[in-house]
Length: 362
Image 1 (cartoon, rainbow, N blue to C red):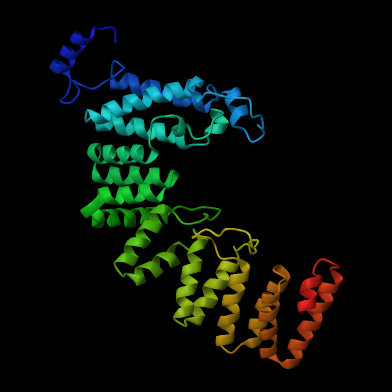
Image 2 (image 1 turned 180 degrees about the vertical axis):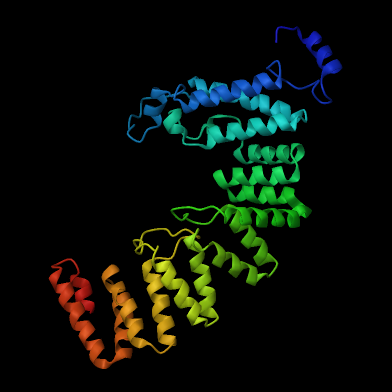
């Protein structure tokens, strides 16, 4: 760094790998750069770069129209700008192993909950960096500097931590004709993952499994999709949702009974009406009671169908659950239907003014 520019250029031309001669590098070596970046990341995690003035300005309680804050004054923004510049220089020079390691660490820093550690949200907004472009560079650098298996592992691990549909599509674009190899890699990952012994099930569904299901669907391998749902249902209760829908469509009522009773043991009550359901949300007790009622009705056991669905009206008191329970009670007998309505009216009256509208409907 203390060399004059002509001497520096002669040094790179004689000793540096091809492409490094014109690289605008600010550290003596890649080791120094990565070591300083790691130290910076550790200091950020320990709160050493927390800026209280920035936190006040970007906090939810700041209503002052006159107070202003310049993010360029933030020490972490200045440091990140330098680190991104160095990572870009290594990438442009074709030193992809260094660039991949740096981009991975920088993106982890920039995409985490930085308000707690830096006092600012979304540092990339203040840097001359496009998030999608940086992620694309990370994937390109990984593919160029890692084995195929390592590329798949590290890119998928990143996507699982920082999921974005555009980034996933960019990854698949880079995979290209190697998709069959990626599918084999995902199946091997699934075989290892199912061996994990967990006390609590996961929410949603792992990215790797969702991607594997996408490949199966594209190839028309519906049996493999059902097998995956059944195989991972205990680890990921969200698998019960498509599995039960498929079994019901096939009129396999015995299997519906088995899986719905199993799922009911770990299911949660229905979410409020305003809740935005995730695409891979676990089935709730209401939907499962519906499956059980339909299965027992299809098997001719109307009494069991009513008994299993009846609690749905207490768990989710609304006219829809009342009407369904009443239909099931009528299927047992007219007397049972009338008795259920009388019981429902009594319970609603005991609750005071709250459910007056529902009481009127019933």
